[in-house]
Length: 364
Image 1 (cartoon, rainbow, N blue to C red):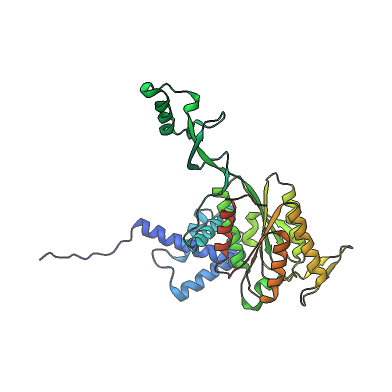
Image 2 (cartoon, rainbow, N blue to C red):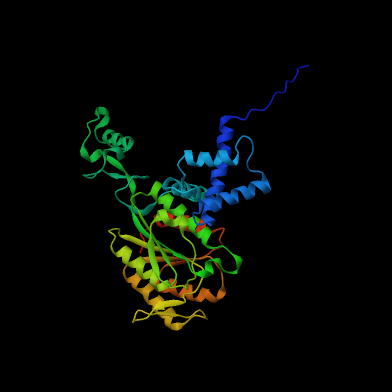
């Protein structure tokens, strides 16, 4: 009989690293909800530990905090921790992993268009060589076959014998992410801003990694609109604002007007109807009751202007209130854009899949 000897279990290094990665991922998600407040996020980590026991002798709370400092994710100033630039990048990376983990099968990375032309992705089709074609795209099997059919096995290659693979035309795109920060994004006990921020950070990280020639700009809109840096996204919070959709679209259009990209689009994440505009005298006109024709018409005018400037608006509604469907459909119809009515859980799937798929065709 073979004896079995039991010894004290010693965790492997990679097990400890996996555990640390899980804790870091949890902290990233909490930081989104606390708008980048590290001190509050760490308090939540201790609270979860009291309930779930996420720390132990191998990785104590104190050791975890020291690891955060060691890796440069947080820094301590005036006896308080704050998020570093590297820590913000970590949140974007974790957000991208989080969103991708919930995507259904079928999301393909591409960023291609259905047009043939200069690019890097080979197609199965070939065509005769033209001056300027890259040598790396030469189909040697077809080329040698053409030479043999023309001159036998002497392999006397002529220019007419060469064939090259077709390639997909790759394109770049400029996108403005319009994020609603009006009070309704946290109204009725539902946190809508945190999932929206997570998806925006995931999209930013996707573009940085995979589509570096693309542009992504971020505009927040409440009573007014303001452009912020992608690095500031973790710190974004909702204010006591109304919804000035027109101001958001106007600022996005002005940003895209300055870009040299041919393909321009706006991704607007919102949960409410437009309830504010600036009148011709620069005063803020507000009406939170119903769909005010004065506000709605000015907003639709801005959507039409975007269409004339070949800017496509994709509207992502994080609520499915039938009262607002008519307005969104009208805006979409006038802009020739797209509208999505998604739950908070599926928002990432809608946005990332739509962004990648849009690269398969020209945005107009």
